[in-house]
Image (spheres, rainbow, N blue to C red):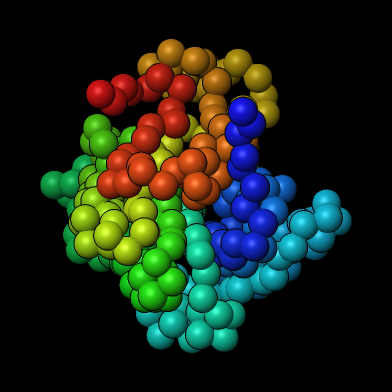
Length: 258
């Protein structure tokens, strides 16, 4: 018996795929044979990942749009055509000039909005746009990248945690609605990842700050995109056909799930 992870013939849209975890997901899905629609807010980053996929012998095309703009999402998917697999990866945790840290009691709605717009409404926009063709075709996968902040809470990051928890709740509800159509909806909850945004934490070795961040982890290293991508491919393929409504932690043992 062999384990077949071939996604040839499937089209996958990965949001926020111009760098970090999203880029890793794009490379992994392309290696599994899928045609990858590489989304990013910045077209140049999307084109760079497409070129990287092409060099490795995969198939990809750039699909830049802003996930917070529902009209832009629907226009882009209308032009690109239906997808079999949607990976909601785009998110912000202090990127693009936003500050994630701060006490909730000292915050304002203006502080919350950037995190809700990307991490919750962005997921809602893309999922809403991608679902109808999946339902019609009676096959589809929706996979949303969330955070352990949404599972366990995170002090001084309430808006971000709330948005990620909301995205997980959305996936559970969608799973209940579309399962009878052969469509699944799941989440992968990440711990601390090694990405371009966090690279300064790790590039100088075992600094006191890096040790403090990793101390709660059973496996004392940050996660890598490969840690996420292989599970994502399983959930997106035929082997994931009876897994839905779940939030699976990929977090080095930071927190556990029953």
